[in-house]
Each structure stands twice: as C-alpha cells, then as structure tokens.
Image (cartoon, rainbow, N blue to C red; front, side, top):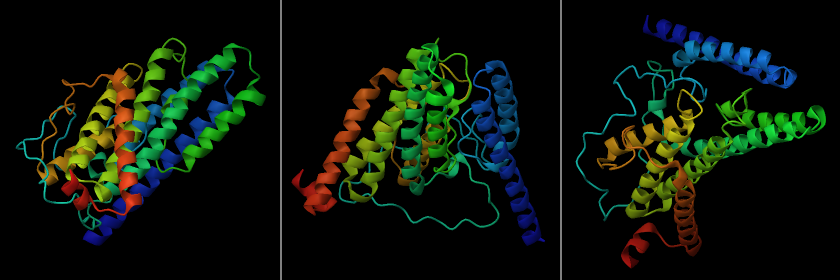
Length: 312
C-alpha cells in the first residue's frame, strides 16, 4: 500500500512538473511573438504566474521567480525566524567539511527550498550570474527599443540566446526577462538588482570553495557575506516584485539549515527586520572575490587548511 501511494505521488508530481514546463515554454514563446503587443504579452504572463502559484508549491519547483516560497510539511519556516542557537563558532581546531547527506526515501519525493544542500551551491551560483546578465539585458533591451532598434535583427536573437542559456541550467526562470512595463521607470532598481545578483553569486562561490578548502574562519566569513548578499537581494527585488527571488530564498534556507546543523549563530541579516543595504553589493563582491583568490592561491600552493590555520 505504501509503495502504491508513493508511486501515485511521484506520477502526480511528474504530471504537475510537465505542466509547469509547458507553462514556461508558452510564456517564452509568447514573449518572443508579442514583443510589439505588450498588453497581450503581459496578460499571458499574469495568467501563467497564477498557474505557477497554484501548481509550483505542489511540485517544489525551485525557480519560479514570481511565486512565494513553498511551505514545508514539517516545520514552519519564514524569513523572520531567528535560529534559537547559542553563539558558538565552528571550532578552531577542526576543518570545515561537507556533511554526509542522508538518502531520501520515496516518502518525501518533492524538493523544497528547505531541502537545499551543499550540492546546490554551484548551480545557484550559475543561476545568479545569469540572472544578473538577464537583468542588465532587460535594461539594455528597453533602451535599444526606445532608440528604434530593429526587433527581429537586434533584439530577438539576444532574447533567444539568453533563454537558451537559461534552459541549460536546472530550474532557471529569468523572471526579469518576462514582459514588463516598469523596466524604464525603475531602471535604477533593476541596475541595483543586477549588482545584488552578482554579490550573491560571488558570495555563494566563496562559500562553496570554503567548504572543501577553507579554514573555519574563512567559512564563517563566507557565511556572513552570503547572509548579507541574500538579504540585500531580497530588499532590492522587493522594490519591483511582490515575491522574493527563489535563489535568494534557497541561500537563506541553506544558511539557516547549516547554522542549525553545525550549531553556530549568524548574527545579522537573517530577519526581515534586519535587512542588508543593497547599495553595499560592490563591497560584498570585493570581499567574496578576496576569499576566492586566497583559497585558489592556497590550493595552487598545495597547502592544506590546517597548515594555513597554523600560519595564522
């Protein structure tokens, strides 16, 4: 009986996921065909968005841009939660290592934001970098159209190129490249969002590197940078969207899960009431790149994290 129930759940999940993929394809194709009919494109986008909201939480789709985060079936988790943890840092005499991941059974076949693991970090980096490009392209696209650029010769090929790149990355939905009428009015906000996506991408990259090659101090520095970056992105996105970006939500849940697992406390930027300043994105990028460069140099020198702790 349990096996039949599990199989039924999986079949339903597959069917719903196919529906979401079909909706995404429809939106992409309509966006290309109706560039000169923004009202029609916007109407299709609204309808697709509502369908996403009704279906995606059941499937656990992790990048639908304009939907709220799926609710966990176990514990209630919101961005306002503060971990009830002691102020305990990672021990200085132990190397930061990736934990062994448990094997998920058929009882919970639906991936959710709260299930994000270390293996998701590199994909999140790819998505955030492409979303930063997509945001800048949305601004450039609008400027070119206002300057009279030929849609079929100059605009459509670039639209197609970035959509195809997004299709190569799992669950990469470029919400900023869907038909919108506020790009020009909120150009400054979108430019800031691009910076915040870059900041989150580089912070996540530093975090991913620190898991395998960093000292506990470098790991915690990357953790704090990622906390600031995801919070800054949330603040920036809230100026143009009703719902937070999915990669920002995944980054938040990764941090929250890891802090609970390793028993350390992230002091800042993990609550809506303690938002990071989006305009600090460039500083965050610089700090994250510094961590990456240090870890890259350490790897090229062939020295271990323990050796670097001893030097420090």
